[in-house]
Image 1 (cartoon, rainbow, N blue to C red):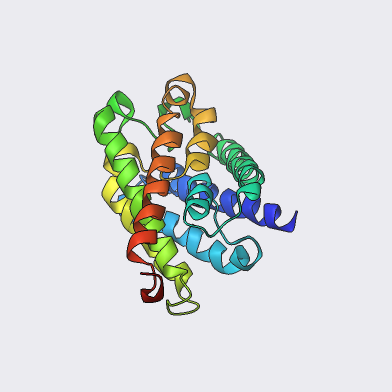
Image 2 (cartoon, rainbow, N blue to C red):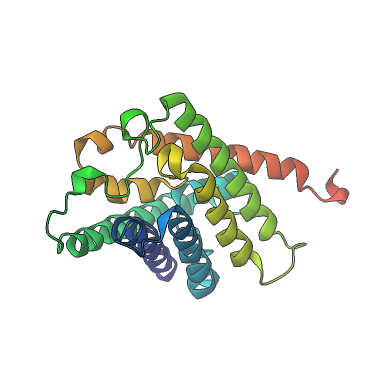
Length: 231
């Protein structure tokens, strides 16, 4: 239960901090943080929670990461479902808290996006379904390579959260215009529930593509990260 609690609160912070920065601060008059600020906000949520509770649960905060770590031989299959449930619960609660905060401003409309992910007309840059699919698969694949590499026993110890947090920042810098950046199914569902039917109708892509990408990333690292003694 302590591990599930850590995953709940870690994912809660990721959605509240990352999506909250997009909804509340990205375009705030005169001092908006913009895409760069939102990208760093997502990275900082993972970095801070990885240090805060990563030693308790492993610091996944993302169903695709849990599945990718299993595919990479780092996580038992029996824990996948409980972890995903805790992550989704954390994301949905965070989305609710953000909805209550944002709703305190006159004229707020969650249906305008609410930091949700999308393609086609719901993409920030109006990118196509195929562009969104490829982007989410590749970005999540690289995220898993970063995670598996940074947490390898041969990597510098104690530095993994920094590499992972900066990796997520870079991923957002690349892909916010395409899909508003998911690479995390829980994050996508956690805000789409409040944004409404159009975003919920597309949220399936932001489950399927990150999971595919995570499994591919695990396969890549199993190949390139194998020790010489195993070759």
